[in-house]
Image (cartoon, rainbow, N blue to C red; front, side):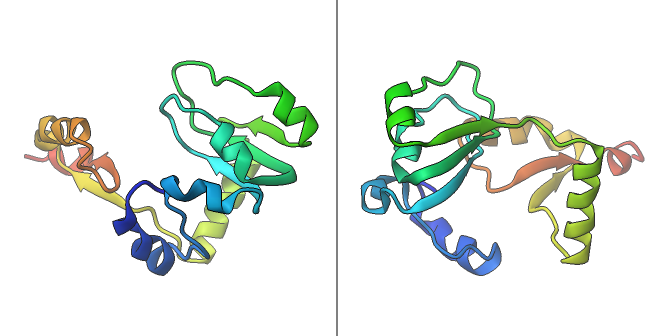
Length: 144
């Protein structure tokens, strides 16, 4: 799910998504999902995500907004939906994830930048002109 329709082809073809949903089309997908992994780190309403879940559906929050999320307790109870969260797995889970990624040649989509590009990267972040996470190439930046 995203707000940008131009990300649809990338999600389906490159990332291997089965479906793509624009955030303004949520009503059409109400009650269709078994689970949602919420990676949004900005404050947001989770009601729209809960509406997407089937009964007994699970919303797992891994993005950590600054402000607490408001929980619609009545809807959670009457619709038998669950919310959970996780910051990080333990050593065992992390190793399993790394092994799985290596076995299936899953690599992160990142933009590698040098240290002298950090100010520009910050400006791009402020403009929301970032497709991937920035990774600073410290080793090569220090060689100069």
